[in-house]
Length: 400
Image 1 (cartoon, rainbow, N blue to C red):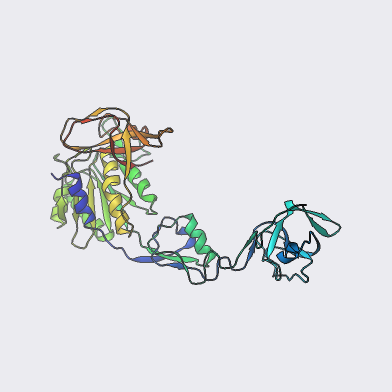
Image 2 (cartoon, rainbow, N blue to C red):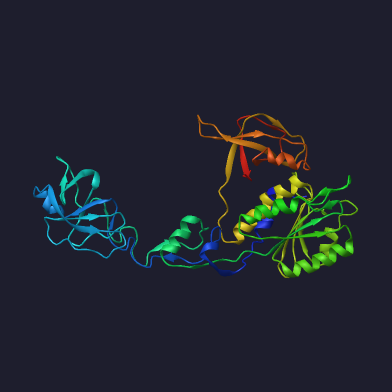
């Protein structure tokens, strides 16, 4: 049995590169960019009007002129107009091109228009160039706007659209199979017999992977060694990663370790000094398929996916390790076994200090799936002690 940190180190030493692919811009949110996005022209591409009002030449105002005959309108989306005389003005709409020979925009709130003449408010103070966003002020043609390696959000998608990129080159996502095991499981639409339960782990894990854009395929294996070995052999040939749930403990019907050994999947470890999730099997097939064989208990399976698979996936896609989050216990908590304990907690921010607080929601064991709905996160309590005091700070794994 190895420690949580040892298990993390081993898993993170086996990160993979799944290559790249082009995706339509509409499907790019959440994906990892592998090429720089550069400005295809100046940002903004012209000196842009930022307030509805009138466009003037500042020198005329500086020379004491307060009334300006209106020569026309510079609309957004219209070609650039020219101010024919410094003593006149053009009405100017937000988003339009600053007219030629004009350099300053005065907003409508500061003018009174009568009989085609714009009169400035008495005593108005203006600044040359106000309300005009200069061409190239944000970025110049060829400037890198978004560097490769960024996880794309709607903000980056908007930038890519602005520079005309209908497709983006991104990290390819791994193909993933989620495999439930056990004769006690039935489908979610079935009515379970008294000795059966509905399959839930597959759906919980699928939902976590969906946040990365991964559509994981669900599979089920019954409690039979020959069947388990045959199905796992087939799946190892089709997927980049297998996520199993159940069949890895020491029960007489837990055939997954034996089947993986028969298929020459290299075992890196089997048990971790933690609760929940002690019987966690991790290995690698000869062709590089990674196998995360998680415990079957719902809380164990869910927690192990968050604590171990998600960091592996993150770094395999080229992202830096996520920044650690810490929370402060709001009450004493006791845990006797010398194991790392993942305590379910409800979180909130203390409005007086801004600190993230964690209130224990202990539950009734690793089979208490319903308790996950009452909590927000797991607080990682280190081994080597049994009393964790109110006010102490520990690392947090959010799932909400």
